[in-house]
Image 1: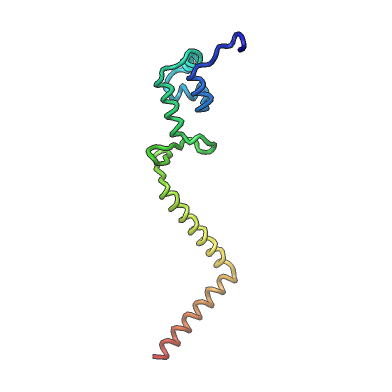
Image 2: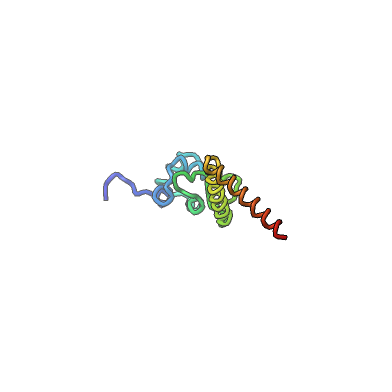
Length: 135
């Protein structure tokens, strides 16, 4: 064991190694000054502070680009919006339909697409006339 270095507290290991928070962010989450976090890193913290960090870690989506998102009661939340698995899947389906419609519009905006629409109309009118003339 190295001399002159005091072992870090359990709070420090939870804060830094398990949850991955720096002193400033931990102080902000718990609502205490940074100096108190430094003291707790050395001497230990109340169990409630450790539990609070662990609870935050369970709900926090700790990946780049997911800042502000968290899980709560089985629902993904961002600001005032709730995202259930069903809603995300529905939005994915809607996005796919929108993509398909956008591609169809792009096709129709070409000369070939316009010609196809014109031919389809002529074929439909001809078919209607043939059906009317039979009766």
